[in-house]
Every structure is written in C-alpha cells, then in structure tokens.
Length: 214
Image (spheres, rainbow, N blue to C red):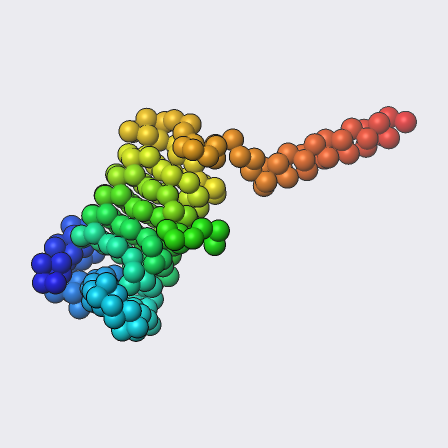
C-alpha cells in the first residue's frame, strides 16, 4: 500500500502543475483519497468481504464525490484530476498511468451481462464529462475528448471526439476510423434538423418573392 501511495503521489505531482508538494497532494486531493480507499475496498471484495468493501467505497464516495466500485480492477498510478462526479463501474478495468478528469463515467449501457463496463488501456487520457459505456477496450495511449460519448472500441494511439464519439486521429495522423461500428457516417440529428430548417426557409423565401412579383 505504501508503494502504491508513493508512486501515486509522484504521478499527481508530475501531471498537475498546481501541485506544490506531495504532502499537499496527500492531504487535500480527493482523487488520491478515493483511489487509496478503493485499494482497501478492492482487497476486501476479492477476499470474500464484499459487504465491507461496499461500505468502504460508499464512505469514500460521500467524502470525495468519486464513486469507484470495489469490484473494478485498477492499475498503478491512476490520476483523477479534480474528480467530482467520476463513476467507475464494477467490471471496469483500468491500466497503468491513466488520467481521468471530473465527470468521467466508465459505465454500462444496461444491455450487457457479465462484463458490462469498459477496459481502459495504459497511458489513456479521458477528458472531463466523457462517458465510456460498454464492454469494449480503449487502446493504449489513446485520448478521449471532453464531453465525448464512446460506445465502441477505440484503437491504440487514437483520439476520439464527439457524440457519439468518432476517431479523428490515429498515430498522430488525421483519419476517418470507426472501428467495428461505423460511427463516422452516423447521421447527426441536429445537423439534419438544421438542413431541413434551411431548406424550409429557402422555400418560404422563394414563395415570398413570387408573391411580391405578382
């Protein structure tokens, strides 16, 4: 546990320019408190003390605003920046050196059984308010933009943005990649509505012009 704490504090200090000392991080950063309490809760969960594990996780949620199910599997040096509103589901898996911002949800869609939550690779960044929903993988070194809603697999070294999320960069190059599900060509309902309104406006303008000519 001491090794986890030491390397977690070092990870926060490396990633957060506002962090002035490891002591300050240990005392005041809710992400550190939430993850360290998760470690205890997870130990209880995996050793048959599930009720106690849930109790520890719920107390951590009330204290930090971060909810991590004790059944989740989390690697080393996880950094949760700010943290308020972060939710990590029971079957979620998180690799090493992952950075999550406030409001991130690693959740399910309600349609799956067993493995219901995503697997996050190593060195992944997930921006504030992003939702990653379903039992698929987000590959190593990927970036999920703030506010994105990810519903299918993201390959390694990719950047995904939008609702639903689409991959716009892969290995540093701009691409139109949609993985197993064609997310790029999904119709944007807002854009379609705007086009329909524009067409209607053009028709009304034409009718008005004809009326003036008469």
